[in-house]
Structures are given as C-alpha cells and as structure tokens.
Length: 282
Image (tube, rainbow, N blue to C red; front, side):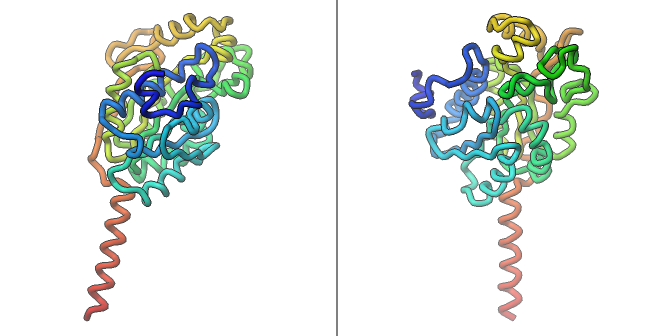
C-alpha cells in the first residue's frame, strides 16, 4: 500500500474489488493525488458516491466522511449537505456515466444551475458494464454491446455537435473538462483546478472496462488492447485527428466567477434576519 493509500483510504478496501485490468483505479488515484498535491487532509473532504461500478468501488473507501446517493440522487444530497458544511470543506463525488448523464442528469443540471460547490468526477466505462454491458449515453457509434449486437446506432453525448459539456456550460457549470484515465499527470492537474473552484466542477473521464466493454467491442478481455484502443482515440483539444473520439483537456474554466449556492443562500438568510431585526427595532 503506497503512502497516499495509507493516508487517504481505508485499509480494508485496498486493493480494490474492481475487475482485473479495470481502469477505474487510475481515476481514483489521480483524484487522491490531486488532493495530496493541494495539501488537503482527510477531514477537509466529504466524499459521495453513486451506483454502478464507479459508486460500488468507491463507497466507504475514503478514510473519512462518506455518503451514497444511488440512482442519480447523490447530487441533491450533496446540495443539502453543502448548506450544513463549513465553507472551507470540499465535496467530492465519484459517479458513473449513467448517474451523471442518464438517470441523474436532471439533478446534475440543477447543481450546475445553482453553482453548488462539488467536484464531480464522472468515471465513464462507456455503458452499463455492471449489469452485463449494455450501451449507454456515451457509447461510441458502431460499438457492439449486449444490447446493440449490430453496433450502437443512437447519437451519444460526446459528439462534437451535441457534447454534454456544452449543455452543462449553458446550465451554469463553472469548470468543465474531459480526459481519459491514462492521461496521468494531465488529469491530476485538471482535477486540482476543479477542486479549487468554489462552485460546480465536472471532469468527465473515460476508463477501460476489460470485462464487458472490451469483450463485446474488441472481442478480447486483454487489458492492453482496451487501454491502447481508448488511448489511440483520445487527443488534446486542438490536436484532434479523424480518429479522435475524446478531445481532452479543460473545456470551460470560469472558476469563482459566480456566487456559490450555499454561501449565497446563507447571505440571503442573514440579510432577511437583519431586515426583520431592523423593522422590529422601530
């Protein structure tokens, strides 16, 4: 167990219970590394999780306060919790693509609208892998899955002309980025920026599923194949090729440009209380 795991994670959850070759650990390691680089302690963070592979593997792994909100409900729980927390604490959420862009999408939009402080790391394994490998909101076109044996034919949320990050920007999010889990140091740096934003941040990160996605899409559970397949189809913004599916980097950074939800609400309450006190004194 390395020093970051010893400091931030619960020993009984190490090593991960994820499938052999799963890239989810890369996402989590990058986030923990970002928190370490920013000198956050365990008590500075409240970590929320959702359902699916991402939520199940992260739940109760953080060596501090945790909560879970399955089926897209982690966001309203986080908004309520934010009101009760000290301003200098941070909320971190690790969720899957379904919880972010499917069943939980309406709650994500309202969290962005209100600019509630939370850093949402969307760990995207490109479909419903924990239930057998059906296609989902971000499955690339033409990919064979359990529910698309002739190739996924529906539009998805990462097309340049219909990118979900554009929707979130219009909804009011103040920090948005996309990476693949193999981005390593670049992903860590992006997560550091996301965490430091006093508002709503979301970092969409694609990671390899060896068990279901690789089996169906590539015909092999060989981890090297699926890691290279994703890496070869990712490129930094401005360096895209015709094969690029995932354009990586910071899409939108308006950090600290809008009032944060809980702080604005507390100020409003304080102003109302003061007004009634002033009226009562006359």
